[in-house]
Image (cartoon, rainbow, N blue to C red; front, side):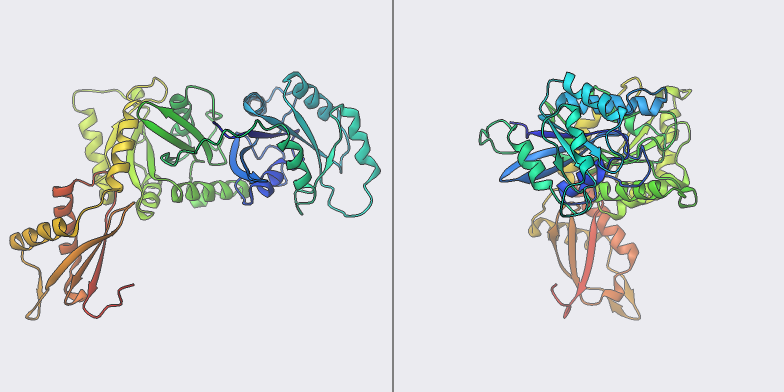
Amino acid sequence: MAKPMIAIVGRPNVGKSMLFNKLIGRRLSIVEDTPGVTRDRIYGESDWCGRKFTLVDTGGIEPNTDNQILAFMRQQAQIAIDNATVIVLVVDSKTGMTAADQEVAGMLQRSKKPIVLAVNKMDATGPVDPEFYEFYNLGLGDPIAVSAIHGHGTGDLLDACLQYFPPEDGAEEDDDVIQVAIIGKPNVGKSSLTNRILGQERVIVSNVAGTTRDAIDSYFENETGKYNFIDTAGMRKKSKVDDTIEKYSVLRATMAIERSDVCLILIDANDGVTEQDTKIAGLAHEAGKACIIVVNKWDMVEKDGKTMDRMREDIRRDLSYMTYAPILFISALTGQRVTRLFELINYVHNQASTRITTGMLNSVLADAQTRVQPPTDKGRRLKIYYMTQVGVKPPHFVIFCNDKKLFHFSYQRYLENQIRSVFGLEGTPIILSIRQKGDDEN
């Protein structure tokens, strides 16, 4: 059974994101004292009194607006409301009840969902401010005084939500979900790809670079497996990141790479590999993540019989440090080859999780040394004793030898190529650690 879902809604700048972060216990949603910072739906997991649930932070609802982004934000909030078990309407005690609060309350009442009213910014302890009582006029029952900054009242708030949760059915949760981060520079089609995969307008898509600001999780399941797609903010050059909010966005994207199993590195087919693409791909490579290079907007490229081969050669040249990553040419707009992504994601994830026995590794090692003798320096020859695997995601191998200084980088690269030629390990980086006799085993 799916976990109960609490949607946090309200007009802009009432403290929804700060309350969301307080309830999940970490800074997942960007908080900035600027209306309209949260744009898409942001999901987080939490628990209260033994019940696990999902929290959704939404963009501020402007009931009447002609602004395209604000209209999208309202649409995103409406989807969260439709999927919620219970809705928390957040209002601001400092500004008092506004006409926008009344309109949002009316919109929520039409949804026929249970609503809990949270009066935020009640930061002082002691007697309740008289303005608190005017929120009874919204007709949503007893308001609950909370402070998103200090955490006052959040227990009462969750108690009120808990009464609307359905009974537990004791079903176990699945742990076999592959975490997939979609990364790339702004405007390469990350959100369009997410929406194409999910078959719904899950993420705001706009030609305005920088529309996505948070890293947004979307669960998806089909016959090939279970996935959590993390749509990230586009990462621009540091010189162009002068907006405080965008700095947080880049940090979120980097954090999304860290918690992913597989990274889809999106490249614009019209631009080819840019300097920024190499830096973004480098983040995934350095983090040791399984990677797929996804060339998007392939439908917009004029082609002849060799266009794809030329593009593939250019990518291999410009991203020479990740020749292990498969390349897929797609169009998020038309859906061309998008379904191929699932089998590739499963494949590279399995490759990154591969375990090889020490016996098989040392057989390959012995054969490799027979073909190409280990290097010598001033009469001393490198002696390699044995190799063993110590980790996965990515595969991590330790090689024991007589002298680390004799183990030239070129010979390490040669051994890595030999391992790949025998065992595959496509789509994943490999870590080789060199130790010599007498080294600490840790």
